[in-house]
Amino acid sequence: MRETFPDLCPDYNSGASISHDVVSVSFGDGYEQKMPKGINHTQLSYSLSWSGLTQSERDTIVAFLMKHGGVTPFHWTPWDGPEQLWTCEKYTVSPKPASYYDISATFTKSYSL
Image (cartoon, rainbow, N blue to C red):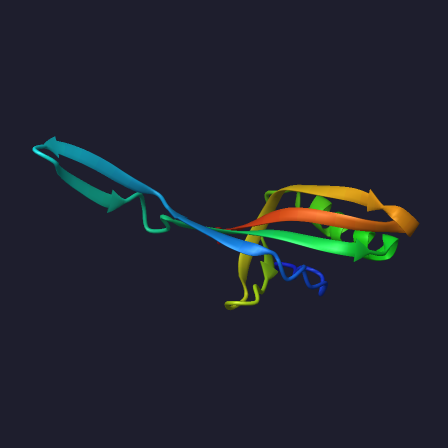
């Protein structure tokens, strides 16, 4: 059973990125034909950040992401859509004054079973 990302809301300035993986063939005279690369050709990712985290909150997020290792999908619900499966291959942790921390991460939609 897939785990759910901890209930720690990212900052408001986090945003989505959408791209479509397509095959393009040019036939000359300006004619071009495009088609999707596979059934899941739309790539969706969110650039997320959490600011002013306590050490406990930081540890919760880092432990969760380390456990999944960028490979195992987990449930997460973006603010503009339904709960889906995601992976996180890269994130950064930055210490701030007074024992607070910032985390930046990119969640990529997973089409794994």
